[in-house]
Length: 128
Image (cartoon, rainbow, N blue to C red; front, side):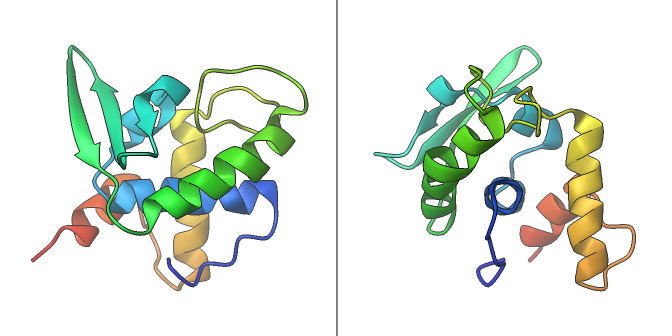
């Protein structure tokens, strides 16, 4: 993922999202992540899942990718609209769970990995 080229707004979003999944963020947390839940200064995410919330360190690569997406990619995707969602679709709305799955599957196929899922990516990144 470090070498994943991010040339347009969707690729900037996808890189940040894939790195978040690799850090242990669940697909449901990706779609519910709000701007107020991101702390780039201290490098953590506040994740909302059902009735519980948790705090997750962003590690090394995610803060830079997320900053670039928030500064360049997200405004281009929003096209003047407003949203509290961190990860937005091409119409400026929040990503759906299905969209997250499609994006992960797309990059999995590009890497020659068939059937890659958000949970599979998350779990594989944390396998010992």
